[in-house]
Image 1: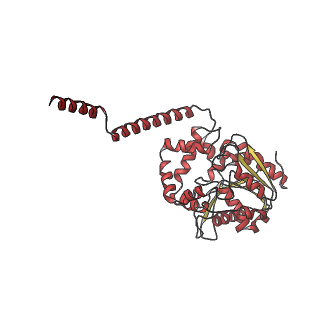
Image 2: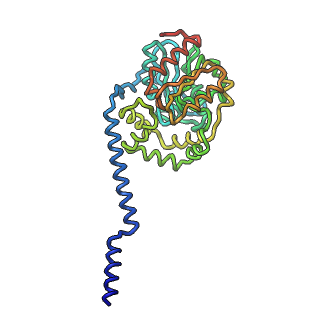
Image 3: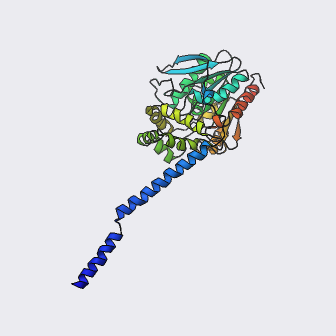
Length: 338
């Protein structure tokens, strides 16, 4: 009896001292979560100390506003300012026309007429019957060129999704190329990156979950960091997160499906205008290889690598982008202004 009592006491103490596995797991998860939160806080605090002259007021771009009707019943919101050679600027996915403002201000100062517009489904623009498709993007670019381009030829510029729209006119509106003096393709792609990426982009649940995730300010900052190279600041991250938040879920899902399976590279042999392809060397969203492929497919192009810039090169290196546009305008027959 004494033996049995001692055994019970020993086994009971062992059970008491050894927590159940679920409790151990919960403890580990709690510690890990706490460490992650602490790490995030430390990271965000370190980022907030980075020097920056990035001013949200730079995104104000006053000018003449236009609402253009597309042939499929959609609308394109555009702002026009300045006089001189015309440059038309199209932004990327989950952005809006303000993404181009840092570059646009530099072009205005150098004597250009600048037109920035919202892609369909973004900002104040709406999709027509063609929906959120590459053909719809091409038609909107053509609408802006035809209605606002004027008598002289224009320079067309596209960043990321905007670059896809510019390339798409080779397939859907090759006639418009007669009105184009040159093009600049910035941090963009000519085909779906990979099967795994296509699967993610085509899954609305994944995209919606991500969109919900970045609505939290701190998580949004951490997610936005992936769009930049070495030259970034917290105000930049917040500004990018703002346009993410303002973009409808339907736009993200619609263009996610469109980008999930496409290849424009075979069409680029018809894109015979002088073109500059620009990409940051540390762009992880549309890596340099994709720009190299576009450059190889174009009959008349030049590739520019911007050191240490990421996908948001239009904010990290706006002076470099403006310089390339100005140089292209001069080489394409427009008056060189600098």
